[in-house]
Image 1 (cartoon, one colour):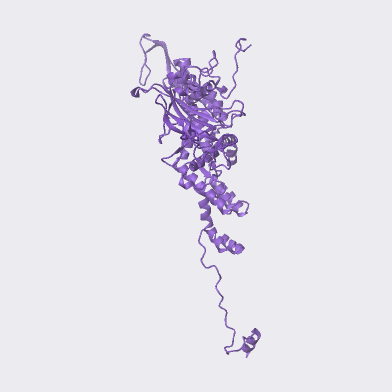
Image 2 (cartoon, rainbow, N blue to C red):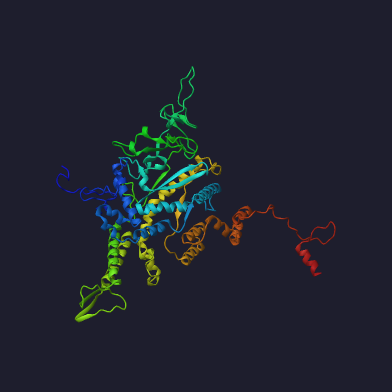
Length: 628
């Protein structure tokens, strides 16, 4: 017997249950998001487990754009639109995005900045990969792409990156997608944090009457599957572009058989097809397939969702090379789609949580307080006046400068002061703003609302930033692995695209280092680094990296180290005494060693007395002759 038959209300606790308090999200009668407010979440192709997620994204986007009242109007009527929204949620999102990104971002390959490494070949390889990745980041405007994705990730709880090889620009292109377009097929019996083996990017296209196009659904699918024989673009009986297997010409001795792709091999034991990717040390039996198709919404009938759409109704797209995107083999062993959660997902979960989630009710109270204050300010600016004892009560009175009122013998003129109520509302609003900041873990100093003169000491300021430090540490931890995957995928796409600069390059682990987000004392950092480096407890590379993290304007740590060593003549002299090798000393200074390394022949003085044939005089004989 279910809860409904007993007359009890079911309690839903999931990744989005913090929104259950809103009637528009959890209708009291049905317990589900309101259909009029979220019609796109109830589309026939949206899976059942995506309704609450898509509705949550819309609610959060409404708060970010000061449209929460407009959204609530769909259920609560026109009175809901009277609420004042002054951009507090948007301000919180912008502040958190700036903190989680840091002042700057650097791509670092471990070993590239180590000038004293034991293997010069490994250091040179790391330096080359680091330079190539930094060049790609500059060409692809990586900081701007990260800002676009972080705006979605912090505000909605999830962000999506897509990497694709561009044959015209000869580099991987990076795009960001709204998480509402992202539909992964997660394993039912696995960990939700595992990388999905099939990912859909789907959204509806509106009707285009000028081009006679009906409302459509576009779906881009990336799927890891077994390697199959090669296919080629063709046309089916209905004239649709499709892909079909390529077969060999039949002969008298052999029938027609499928053709294997370039570099593919057939495993005679298992019957599977495998290939060797340049970045793997063993053969792989799986590859990534790309499908880009469009459906008319009128053709989507019956029980179906985004993962099982009727392929016989699909119209496949064609790329710039003329290839039909119908299970096109990308010759990759990974899906180039990265989902970035805002927070570390709970165990067996896939989705992150918005930074506004726990403070959303405080933002509702802020909007109500702003609305009440706006109404109270109207009576304060235009005071209410009570008049009694006028000669003609039917006469309309107007209050203004220079006005005169004729009152009777018992007449009174009373002004009602509402400013105390307005003052209380403003103080209440400040209390609510502080409560929201505490819940989100944004101290007043990080929001810029604290007077710097009121900070008693730098230590007190550092203590007040403790909640923010733990918050940003957790948010960056949720992004660290995805940042590494992003740079790893970029390297593999360059190699798969056979870019000449990447010829012979072996992919190496790379990290995306995010800069500091809090004010730093550069003088104190310099003193600390100088003391540690002078005491020989840290290396020059670590010292330069610490100064970079403290906000010093060091663009390239490797170049900075080279410039420092080029002027370190005292250390070069010690190195020459220790090794006696001019080649290594010149390399330390960044100069070229002299061609002649042998010491010149000494020119000794002649100790003979000038008589031909006589032996050289000893020191004693020279002294005797000198006395004579």
